[in-house]
Image 1 (cartoon, rainbow, N blue to C red):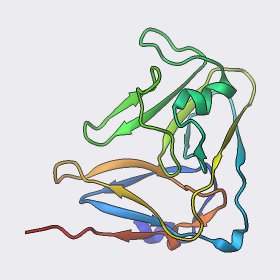
Image 2 (image 1 turned 120 degrees about the vertical axis):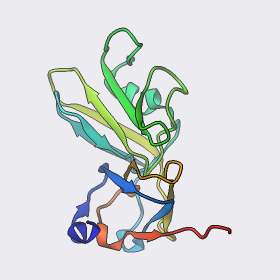
Image 3 (image 1 turned 60 degrees about the vertical axis):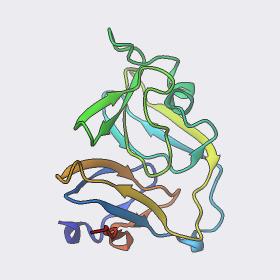
Image 4 (image 1 turned 90 degrees about the horizontal axis):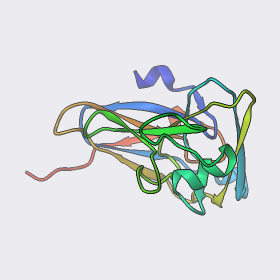
Length: 178
């Protein structure tokens, strides 16, 4: 029920689930009144918690190890045991999770794309991302395709370095031929 979320603010770094039953485009509104966007942002992640995150900048290097590994340590799930941290992405086509196992094993980390992140340290850790802010002069658009005409979930998130209201997000149903 989207109307139940209408007043909900989506802070920076926040990821969330969207269920679609047909192909949709989701359009996040710009807010030029926010002023110049930073080129570096930081998030604290507590131990023993999964976080559904979306990075609010276009990272200089969008590979998951470059975005998360420089702060959390060189390590990822190698198929046999968990190392320092892990991240995964839901694949709507197969309705399964894809875990990061090395460079190129996941889609690039870009603003608006949601990822699960978890770390095994006993203390809070800081993730710092440097990059280019998303344009604040036009809507930021993401395509959310259905799976072979059936409903499916997508992990998305706030692509901006500032909070926005869910009620200001627009949904567009693409036109189809035929």
